[in-house]
Image (cartoon, rainbow, N blue to C red):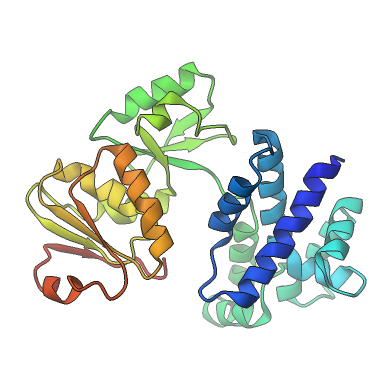
Length: 286
C-alpha cells in the first residue's frame, strides 16, 4: 500500500474532525478536501482520487468500524480494521447487531427513519446512501446542445449516458478525470446531481424576469436556471455561507452567466427584494 496516500488519508480525516469541533459552521467534507488538496498540490490526480474515495468510505462506515474495532475509537484503529481485510463488511448482515449499527447510521437518525418508513424501507434507504455516489453532469444548454457534449465525451472514450429524467443531464458510467477536459474549461458542462437538475427545471424563469435562489450554495441550481434567461432579467443568490457564494462566482463566470447578484447574510438588499420576485427557489437544507 502506498505510504504517502495512507499518511495523507489519516491526516485529512484527523484534520476534518478537528475542524468540526472548533468551527461553527464547519466546511462540508467535499469543500474541506478541496482545500486540503490545494494545500498539498504535490499530490497527483491518482493520489487525490484515492484519498478522497477512501475518506468518504471511511466516514460512511465509521459507526460500524467503531463497533468491530478495538478501543480507543480513532482513525488509526478504524483504518487498521478497514484495510486489514473485508471481514468487517460481513457485519452488515449480522442479525444480532442493531440495525443502525449494521448500516453505520446514527442511532437517533435511523430511529426517525424507521418510525417514518418502517424497518425494512429504512434499511433499504441506508443501504443506498452507503453506496458510492454516481456522477451526473449538467450540460450548459445555453452554449451547446446535450447531444454535442455527449458526442464529444464519447469520442474521448468517456463512458457516458443520457439521463432519462433531466433533459440537460448526462450520467458517467465510471469516474473520470473531467476537470482537465477542454469542454469543462469552456463551461460546456458542470458536475451536478440529477435531483438538483430536476428541482431547477421547475423554475421556468424567462428573459426579463427576477428569480431568487435562496439557498444557493455554490450555485449549481442557479447554473441550471440562468441559461434560460439569456442573460436578461436577474438571478439573486443568497446563502448563509460566504465561501459557498465565492465558489459560485467562479462557476458562473466559467459558464458565461453575468445576470446575477450574490447576497451573503444580512445584505442590505435582501429586505428590499421581498415581494418583487417572479420565482423563488428554496432547496433546504442545502
